[in-house]
Amino acid sequence: MSTAVPEITFDAFDSAHRADPYPAYRRVRDAAALFPYRFGDVPVTLITRYDECAAILTGADWGHGYAAGISPFRDTTAAIPGSFVRMDPPQHGRYRKLVAKAFTPRMVGELAPVAGKVVDDLVDIALERGEFDVLEDLAVPLAVAMIPVRLLGGDPADGARFREWQLAIARGSDPDSLLEPADIEARGRAALACLGYFGELAARRKREPGPDLLSELVAASADGQTLTDAEVVGMALLLLVAGMETSINLIGNGLLALLRHPEQLELLRARPELVEPALDEMLRYDAPTQFTIRVALADTVVGGRRFRRGDGVVVLTASASRDDRVFPDADSFDVTRYAGNRPARKHLGFSLGVHYCVGAPLARLEAAAAIRALLERAPQLRLAADNVDYRLSLIHRGVMALPVTV
Image 1: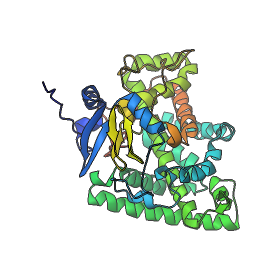
Image 2 (image 1 turned 90 degrees about the vertical axis):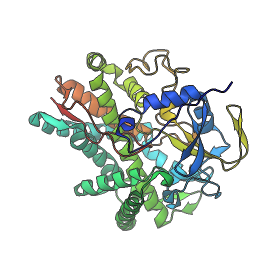
Image 3 (image 1 turned 180 degrees about the horizontal axis):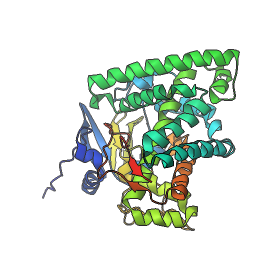
Image 4 (image 1 turned 45 degrees about the vertical axis):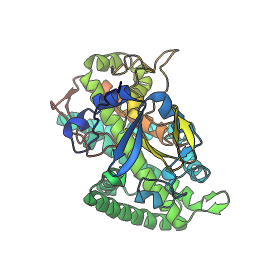
């Protein structure tokens, strides 16, 4: 007797799916842990459940496969020197360790007063207006101030350019087989402009080093080899896009979840010590990154199925973080889930393994600062729209705007 497999559609242009992809994730997760699918013209397997996702993300037999020439996913951003997010060990580790020192607890702790001052100034303006967009009036300028400006040494006056590049390159980070030609062209233009900008800035930093990570990268070496100019600016592009995407969408998605669950908002306001564990619930419940792609680097077995070298999979981390087998009442938003002495299991909102989000501490710092300020200073915070629209992306999940009244 055969079991009918439900038809699951992942369509970035379907507004209903973008508004709430989680029912589709549940259907495919309930159907199978390993679900055959096609991403555009690429046959893949969707990895839908927590245990199988975690096994692949932490498994040595899995990676990106671009350097080995075995990836079925076409992705021109993988060819950008220094873009270590698409690299496999040991090359990945050599580059990652150069930027990881900027995100140590000590370094991030030193940034806390900076983030707090930026947030306070932005909230001052928002409260005077009475109505504002959480994204463009708070999350975006905060991310610009902390990442391309503070971390990379960019000009604060170029905030609009940074945002434009981030959106275009992030839209183009979906597998090429899912993109329209116009998206690929826009990604290329934005990448060239961004690389040119940081190339000029890196050249100045060689002559006049500043107190920023870009200056350190210019002078750094990976295992004794000085980074090339192309590698330095490639790493800057990666940090700008990934850093802004993560923090902006964590703030937007997290606040939207709170506003749609007013009892949780009031609980958090009454117990501000829950803000830090609440960030984990926000990342579990509605993560900024919905999936990641991996390629079998060798013949291997996951979930009882054999994969051959070069087979591609889509690791649905957002589905895994809603897996009832791991998280009781997984579709409920509970800001206490990660509080106390027996917190829930680790979500996959920042991934796992060697590609765990290197900028996670900074994203958490920014989100905590923004959320605490609004909880303390905007007691009448409310959504100003019945519906919100989501960006055209599968891999990144974020609203286009989040209007609120205070």
